[in-house]
Amino acid sequence: MARNLDEPPPRRPAYFWWLLANGLAICFAVFSWVICLHIFRHPENPRNYEILRKLKRLPELKRYSILEAPSAVSLGPKELYRKFYGFDDAGQKRLNEALLRNYLVNFERPLLLTYIEGNYRVEEVRPMGEADFFAPGFAVRGRAMVKPDELSPAVPYPVIIEYLFPTVDRAAFSWFKPGDTLSVSKVPNCAAVLHVSKVTVDGEQVLCV
Image (cartoon, rainbow, N blue to C red):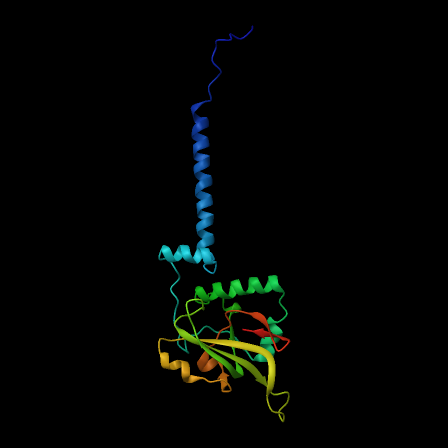
């Protein structure tokens, strides 16, 4: 029999809208959970870091004593060069993100932690400002000095370190001068690699950590 044109179309059952509302709520909850998880797991991302700062949920950095410092491998200039120089741009970017994240969460992943050792000739000393990783304090830039053999004098090696000293002591800036030798060892320095890059010095590409 033909349908009456004045008959209203069938209405959707009430449970359809209930299921739709609950589905949307679940999707929103999952999306929010994923976003929050990403923010807390990746504090090295500048946007995430700023969100955590505003929420006052930044990870609290721990100050380690020599005896409490996490166990990790210690490498001299030659070993640092072999370990870090071969990264391409994409790999270096991922490495630096992982190194920064590991630092911000107090080195929860010791496998990413590497301590620096060796002798470095001081080339530059500068105060650190707001654009630097730490502030206040000062940074010492040094060139690795390595002996080719036991009988030869140390010569420059293609590794540069930027050693960061966080301090409020203004006089500390005068502790080092260009030409001085900065000797670094795990004990007592515990100088960790936080960033890796390649720079050009006198036409030569060198590793900078």
